[in-house]
Amino acid sequence: AAEEGFDVEDVEGAIEEAGHGPLPVLAVVGRPNVGKSTLVNRIIGRREAVVEDKPGVTRDRVTYEAEWAGRRFKVVDTGGWEQDVLGIDASVAAQAEYAIDAADAVVFVVDAKVGATDTDEAVVRLLRKAGKPVVLCANKVDGPSGEADASYLWNLGLGEPHPVSALHGRGTGDMLDAVLEALPEAPEQSFGTALGGPRRVALIGRPNVGKSSLLNKVAGEERVVVNELAGTTRDPVDELIELGGKTWKFVDTAGIRKRVHLQQGADYYASLRTAAAVEKAEVAVILIDAAENISVQDQRIVTMAVEAGRAIVVALNKWDTLDEERRYYLEREIETELGQVAWAPRVNVSARTGRHMEKLVPAIETALAGWETRVPTGRLNAFLGELVSAHPHPVRGGKQPRILFGTQAGTKPPRFVLFASGFIEAGYRRFIERRLREEFGFEGTPIHISVRVRE
Ligand code: GDP
Ligand code: GDP
Image 1 (cartoon, rainbow, N blue to C red):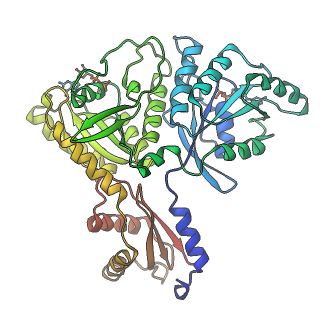
Image 2 (cartoon, protein in one colour; image 1 turned 60 degrees about the vertical axis):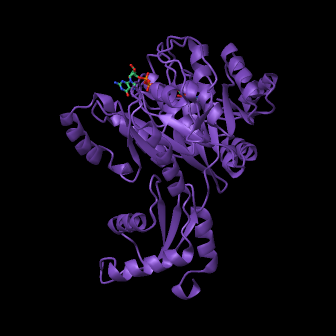
Image 3 (spheres, rainbow, N blue to C red; image 1 turned 90 degrees about the vertical axis):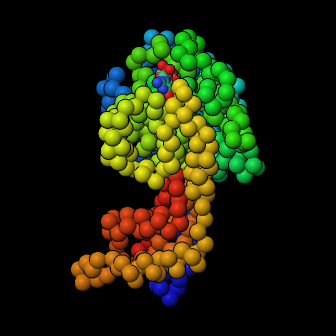
């Protein structure tokens, strides 16, 4: 490394940074209007969350990456959801349930000016039951005079209330220090794999694509009630299902149940549910209704799984309904609309007839294998050396940036760090990714490539 102009420490630092495993997840929960979205904005340090949004405007972004004191984590914002016709208690509980279940730690936001309400107490009960570490945020303490309001919240029995003004930033640093103490270094969820537990699968897709039907079909019995009129909230349920001679954990299967009463905020709720399931899973099976045009909503779900860095299988369902014409157009649509997961194994199934159900497990296994692939450094550099000499980066401003060497910093999904002598253009990065895939497979997995440029 040294003779290429990189400091050994720089190289090691870059590898460590790029090689982080899955990030721990922090959920921000609480009643509407206590300041959750404002707080999430503070934590992520961007104006990306939704405080300015008009009421009723749905959004689908619920997880964000954040960093505090050099540690990275994900934040799940549950602030984007308006009260629905079920009543406020049920709606707060329902959204909190999913977020808490997918989280490694929780920030519970209470409006210190208002004090603890019955709804707050209901969330406290959920938090107790979940047993996850909780940091209590007493929000809207904009000045020293509000501190007394915050201290009343000791009564909630969740430990020290952290007085915060999400709006002005007061106290947020101390609260985030407490958050870091509560968050594990690596997500709890990832330990399951290390210990050889069942692999975790999320079955996701927009409403009515056939998730419940598919689960029933593969589980071999009616364990999930299709079209259930759920009136009350339930815990997210993970189900163990025997498939292809192995046990798989299908996460959040209760989330597949429909909450037909939801009207306002239903889309947001569906997004939160999907994001929570994806966070908990290692592999996402994305179900798409082959009978209908591939929609923006389908693509958002795909993006969510890709951004979360999960192994991915695309399952086109309702294959029994397709005629020749639709099949023709579907292939074109898949090319144009699902280009971002062109590398994912694809199965054409019918939950109704059982068509190709036996292909699901091999596809999942292929995707997981790709997700866990590790390319030895020697092999990677032999490959990079050949690639760079056969296809050099275009000359820019009289200089030719070169990839000097590289290493795979992590897996699940595969993450590479490449060290270069100058700025590497996006087109050339994509070319490298394509060639890496051709050479090493990586079927069913996103791959991350970061490039370090010599100073
Ligand atoms: P959410 O529904 O819990 O996500 O709440 P929002 O983040 O949308 O905030 C609700 C309202 O409370 C908005 O008008 C915010 O500007 C206001 N708010 C949020 N945090 C604070 C705070 O620390 N101090 C004050 N005074 N107002 C706040
Ligand atoms: P979910 O909302 O994604 O859980 O979808 P459901 O499993 O409730 O299915 C929605 C509708 O599509 C139901 O009427 C199912 O009977 C129907 N359906 C599901 N899978 C198939 C399939 O493979 N073929 C056909 N023709 N219909 C299906």
